Length: 475
Image (cartoon, rainbow, N blue to C red):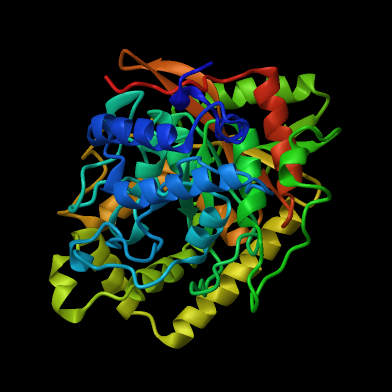
């Protein structure tokens, strides 16, 4: 049998249920790798060995007692440090929140616990989850295990580093502008941003702009689908409610869609000009060849709106940054990018914000009209390989930092605005600066609620041209 860290989440769960692997063996193996490899890739803000061992003991008792077992009993899944786990540190990557302990669980922590997972730690995130790199002042930067000189992306960078390095088979992540898909692409993983309303923010969380979705990063499409089955349970009082899958999201992986209309878009959406690296274009070409061999109709997609129209998105980000509960006396502890974004937020009135919300809704309808004859839009996941650590963060010029992030990720945030699901898969590999790196593509649905279609399509690509799923030991 493969080592514990080589197994997918589903395979590990099956081994635990069968008695082949004991939960305490899982947790000790995971904690050893977290302590040994975690610092090298900046995976964790905090480890929680006491809690993980308690949960492993409880899992052992459930196995002994018999009865119905949850789907991921004994599988280690850390939580991103933008979500609260009761009694554990919650710093959101910020010195302004250093030492804060969460008084309650966020909904995603509850769902993961109900599924039987072991909470081995809180993964690193940039301050308040704002940038597309993970270089907080309160924890080590998150690095790609493929090339530790490079960023693991953001804002779920620690989660992606932990999964790619084989510390855990899956990790909680969240996405308000690409923060699941960007790190997944940078680290050679699968990352799904589900539809608006698919994963509840309840019972405590709110998302006034409707941009952010919780999920996971994993090494396989099937694992991603199975965790969506866990997380897509509604809470009473949810503002959005989508119909559930026909059977399950996992079952959709065995039902490849036929005869799709797929539009290819390699021009940046949210900026006028952004250099698109040859490896990103090669990944799209590879995807096109595979999709055409499957019988799908592949055409060219139009850019749905101009960068000037896209600027309506900025107030939503800025006010979102301003709404974070930072004590006034701790404001000076924030990094320059966060302070700059919060200052931008202070310049918008309530009327400005309402106008931005209305404008973004109109853009979403406009994009739906432009893409009405398409089922899926295929884009590069990222415009370039992940930057070297420190290359994008610009404390001296936060505005330039923000623009650089937009050029790095010109295709992810439009799907947060649309609300439709999008998934990145690591379909290609290429040598860059002497190191072989994974290169992802993004498949974005044009309609809300089309996760089954995307998962079926992504699983078909994985079967047709399998990508490496073994962990990458950081050099």
